[in-house]
Structure formats: C-alpha cells, structure tokens
Length: 326
Image (cartoon, rainbow, N blue to C red; front, top):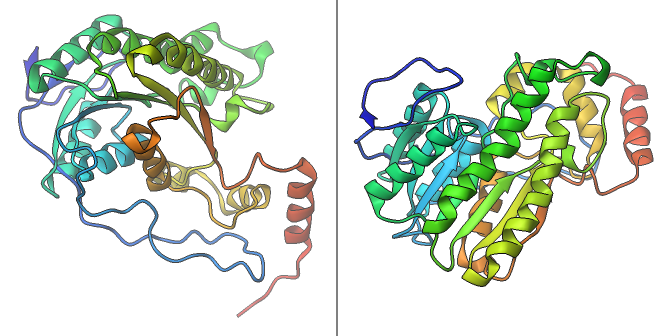
C-alpha cells in the first residue's frame, strides 16, 4: 500500500490512501440554468441537498466509488456532512484528493483512494485499506461509471460497436459493483446499506449508448439479488436511477438547445443537481430507510413518469412560442 503523492490517472491505477483528514466546503451559490419555464410554475428558490453538520452517520464509515466529481463527489460530501468518515475512491487520484480536500474544509473526515473498480486486485486492496484505517465499513455506494469520450463517447450504433467499448463499459459499470459487494459484504454489519447508481437509461430505450444502458439495467437486477441474498443479515441494497443531472460536466457539454429539449421532456420545472441525488443516497443509507431494500428509486423530475406525447406537445409549444426581446 503506497501513501501520499499523486499519480497519473490510468485504467489500472493501484490503490493508495492519503493520511490527512478532510471535510466539506461552505455552501456555494446555485447558478440557475436558463431553461424554458411554464407560466404559473415558478422555479423554487434555495439550494437542494445542502445541510449543516448533523449526526445521522456519526461513527459510521462510508465508501463512495467514482467520488472524484459529479454525483459521487456530492454524495461523499453529503455523507461526510452528516458525520460519516468517507473513503473517497476514484480512478483519478487528483480528483479523489480534491473531493477529500473539499470535505476537509468543513472539518469532516475523508481519505482519498485511487482504484479501478473493474480490477479485483484494486477492489480487494481498497476494502482492506478502509478496514485497516477505520476498523469497519457501514455504507457502500457503488457510483463509479465509465463516461470518458474514449468509451462512452464511442458507445453508439450496435453494428459499428467496438467490442472493447462494450467490454470496458460492463467491466466498470457492472463488474465493478459486483467486485465491491463481493469484498465488502463479509465485513458489513447488520444495519448497513449498499446503494448502486443506475440510470433512467436502464428503464427506457434509446438510439445510442446501448452498452451503458444495458449495464445500468443489469445493475437494477443485481440490486435485487444482493438485497435478497443478504437481507437476512440485516444488509439492505437499493439503487438510484437519475435522469439528467446538471453536473459541472453536463453544464459544459450541453448546448442551450439540448437543455431546452431536456426541459420539455420532464414534468417538473427543475432538473436534478448532484445534491438532489446525494440527498436520496443519504436517505437510503440511513436507518430511516430500514425497511426499504431491493428497490430502484427514479430521480428524474418526472421525465419517465408520462407518455412521450407530453414531451412532444411541450417541446412543440416551446419551439413555436414567439421570441421575446428585451
């Protein structure tokens, strides 16, 4: 086990842990996206998912994979804000360290780990390092997914599919959670929780990203199997299935036109932000969800709750609305 010192990110990074304590950043202002809004449905104010320090997870240890950015970072920060000691795992050592540093700013406890969750050696070493540092593990959040341009960006038509793209997608998005469960479950006490990050892509079809959607769909079934296999030990397993989440990366790559299309697809005026997903994950990890297991909770502002005609009518109305000028 090597400690300290950043390493370049690569597909087979070895696991390492840093020795400095960490915690949460102060609340930042929420930049409202400029999206179409229906009359009479004002955008609610406030920032979702922001909490002061609480004690819901005091004395508990959480491991969050894919915690270097986006949803994973928000979940790690939320759990730390509520008292958990958080193992922040990511394939990119610098982003894992940054999440841990942000957590440290609010006097929480976190340790960055570098791991490729598709590697059993990495996962085995990561779980062992968490147990060595804390002596226990109470919450496992399988959030890591491959979203790189080289893999997700090439997950297009099936007839042109590079088999390596398919294999790498399933290796990270499905085998990764399996390996984490395999090596974590023997150490999880009664009352512990596993949360898998699936996607609405698991529930609907699309014209691209078949590998990603298939892996996320399999993760829904995997969640039920884990819940069934280990429920008699008091271990719960649930999944969250986000739709569009306005992470920093999504804000960078999505055009105003694409954001408008997504706005037309959903029922509620606001898209989810990472903190919204983090609030749901924290609930599922807590004793307040003690009777919930084997479930996949959709968090998509109502995108998958209605007939496609709703989105078509909504988008047509927005597209034909006369432009207004200041």
